[in-house]
Structure formats: C-alpha cells, structure tokens
Image (cartoon, rainbow, N blue to C red; front, top):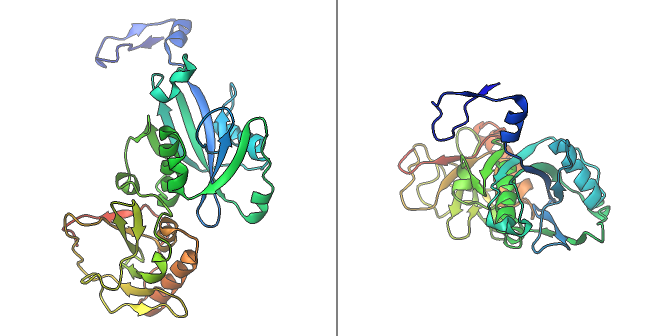
Length: 317
C-alpha cells in the first residue's frame, strides 16, 4: 500500500507501507452515542450518574464493532428501559485525547461521539422510565439552559448543539472539542431553544415575510429568541391584528425591511421552528399554527416548510 504520512506537507512523496504497518499507524479512538429527548414543553431529559459529577444525556460507550445507532438504542434500553430506534443524527463530535475533561482516565485516546434525536416523549413513555439503580441516581426534565449549566462544559455544549440542530433542520452539527466547525445562525448567536421568558409568545407579534417565515429577535444577554412587540416601529407592513380568540397578534413584515447595526439579531424561521425556539409550552405551538392559518387566509402567504433558520444581515432589506 502507498500512503503519504507527513501531516505538515501534503505534497510529500508517498511511502509504501505493508497493511499491518498501515493499520498500526492509524489513530485509535473510543466511540460513544447519546440521545436527545424532550417533553412537550421542550424540556430536555437528562440523567444523574452515580459514577461522576454532572448530568448527562442518556447514552454511553460503544461496544467493539457496534454501530452508532445500535449503541444509542442499546444504551437507552439499558438506562431508561425504553425501546427507540434513532435514525436522525444531530451531532458528531471529535474529542482530542489530551482534553482536560478526560484527564482522569489517564490513557484516554480521544473519542468520536454521536447524538441522535429521540423526539418528544409523551406522559406514557415518561412514566415507563426505569433507571438502573447501580448506575443512575435520578432523571430530570429541565429547560435546556438549566440542563447545560448542570452538565460538564463539553457535555453541555454538545447537548445545546444537538437541540439547535434539531430545531434548525440544517443537518448534523460537527464539533471538535466542543466547537462547531461550521457554526450555523443559532450556534453563532448562542441561542438556547425554549429559553424565551414565560408569556412572551402571547404578547408578541407573529410577523410574516413573503415566504411565510416568522421574524424573531435574539436577546444577546439571555441568548433567547422573542417575537417583536407591536411597538417595534418600522417592522410591519400593516397594523398588527389580534389572533382570534388568542393572546398575541399577527402582521406582515414591511417590504425592504432594513436591520440596523449594533442591535439584536433578526432571524427568520418557519412558524413551527419559531415556536420551538420560543418554547413550545404554554400554547406557543398552537399560536404559531393559528398565526400561520390567519396569514395564509388573509394574505395568501405560503405555509413555510422546515428549513434552516436565516439571519437578516444588518443593512439588508
């Protein structure tokens, strides 16, 4: 076999290696899989291990020769007594062998980790959870920001990246030592899904662009999304009108909307994704559907299908 072996010069002359020599030259890594579950209110399911500090997503190490998806299903069955077959990958992360969070292992060779989407667990599934008492002390349903704060830095960053990837509909996030290699809009602004203040979706305006997407503003301090208020001058094409029978209002975005520099980021997201970012509990999901129905009936706006969240660049209309 012929391979180039110098990392510092990809133009170096290749050298010949016997198959067994080539095999010994390859990096060896551990592997692990975890699953992101939420409930209907957007809270994240985390477990409390007895063998280390901090909370974790359900999951664990891969057995030799085990496929990542199979590993995820096995770990969930062992840790939660739930049967799942995860098929949507949210995160792939490479962790270096010298990372400080793994110093306790001493011989840690590095790891490739996979996070899969377990979907939304209803009351029946949550009631069926049974933990292995020798391994896990408890499980919790927590808002994403609180869950991340109670996890180790790598675990928290990985969980948030997985949640953002689920909401963003942009494909799996790729991380290296907790950092995204190609950060999307939500990652760049550090948006935490479901972290909007309680009731904000009931008092804001569901403002639609011509493609049927909803305008969201990013609070740079709290890292959450909010709907604009009726007092945000210059954003709307018409006077916001109340949603029939519901709190909140609906309007169209002003044509040629210009975003000022230095203010909050302005995002555009399909209604269902906007609801997930705001927090689906408290009727937000239903308000999003009602607003989209009204926008379609009144102005003929399309019902936006899932797509990656887009940012309106400052100065762009």
